[in-house]
Amino acid sequence: MASTSTMKKKIPVLIEVELKKQFQIGKQAKNTHKLRSRLPEFFIGKPELLTAIVRVMCDAANKSMKEKKIHMGPRRKTGFMQMKWPSGLTQNLTVR
Image 1 (tube, rainbow, N blue to C red):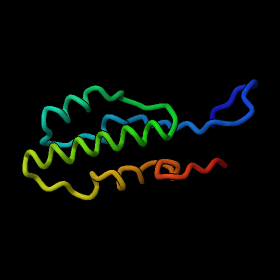
Image 2: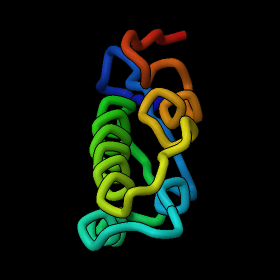
Image 3: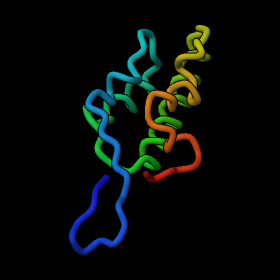
């Protein structure tokens, strides 16, 4: 939780030290490789931003796998990837 002396409410912040590694796949298309290369090595930010990144990367991986005619396992789908981080990523953000 991030806050300052002037802020009245706390803002949840996620820290992921291996963000780029989370989206590593063996046989990826150029588009997916290009997107992954633009990801930072680590992420510090709001859960909503990480949710958007996860969706974009999982959609790109899905398209890449379809292009290569390779089955995409359930561990690479958006829902499973979002489970790696706190439940605030799914839909409702709960602040404790």
